[in-house]
Image (cartoon, rainbow, N blue to C red; front, side, top):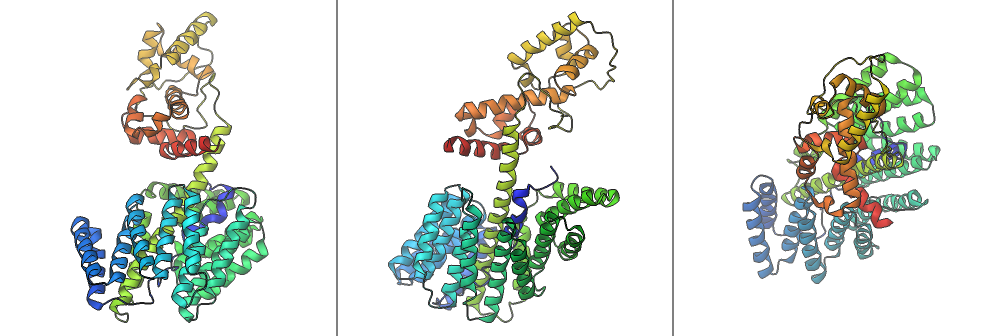
Length: 534
């Protein structure tokens, strides 16, 4: 599918609108001894290349600091663990260390530290789909610093309100709820006294408010907020500026103001192209495709479809790595003017930002996959005719079909046709399609016919070709298992692939996604969510 769903369109800012939201998040109220600042910085970097050795050093540091009563040092070390594990997707360990930091922070009266870690805990529960828990912990963080005493606490409070946008809301007023938190975040950021920090955070706050006004079709308010973002940012951050123009282009496109849409999308392209923002480039190209389809410009349409498909292939690369590298480049420019403590602040801020970007991407991915899942479920293919032509656009090379032209007037009498249909019915009931390396010739031999006649029957009654016929049977089979036998949701993809005759988990996943619009893992997650609600 070349386009992001309509309900997804205005969520794009969540993948980039927080690039700087926590760049100063750890400019904490209380400092720790310089020697410990240096160690924490060193161990945090070592965690990326020598995780086991760095983990041991950090644990020793925590014990040492506790014995000396340097509780803030221990808290900061726990925070390093929490962010590291959250960044690499280890939710359980992220929760473990974030909760340890919270416990110590509350014991020794560091409310800002506890609030920040409540934010991390809330994020992790949100990523796990435990939205009630996520909301509970985010609210705990908000309650701790609801009346912020300084810029640091204001910044943290604004971030907590922002995290709240990532939790799942249901019902017709969900966007209004998101807007409420986005406005609270913006209002908090605007009270920050430090001019530079206020500009950066409030720019991002305006971005979220604009995004949500766009979602609600309140276009004038959306453009006002997005233009404020551009004014505050002044092109300093390509990610923000390019993303804002992209958002404006999408809104103009939605309003069918094609010339205005093209102007803003072109501005976005000039800023974002070649910067490594693969996900944003892909969204940009999908909007250009829609634009030039509406304009009827076939040459431009072909150009952007090709660009889109190229990015689709590259998208498997690490998005998180891209975002982190960008921020490293920004921080390198500051190294000569910031203190050792501030280095710790910026370094940990990068991790938070990376997490926010990952969460934004995951939110976008979830909405897209949910839309595809719902569409597939609503249009489930009939069991009586396995017509997969609209789902599987390429033949599976593992299935050995004989590529021969089928003429409509080939001599195939009605008696033979009925006999072959009955044979195929038996083949389907016995799940013969799950045999690895199944070939058209082998089935033809079993049914005492030739491949030409069998191909005609399959094309006339089952699918547009043999490969799609087999793939559709296999995917329908495994979907029935996933939906009706919960134990299948616990199996590895390699097992599901083997059971359905695919040579590898990758081959299985590709065909499954072509058929359903979502990956097997996402389908399993979504079907579990659907059944738990019901």
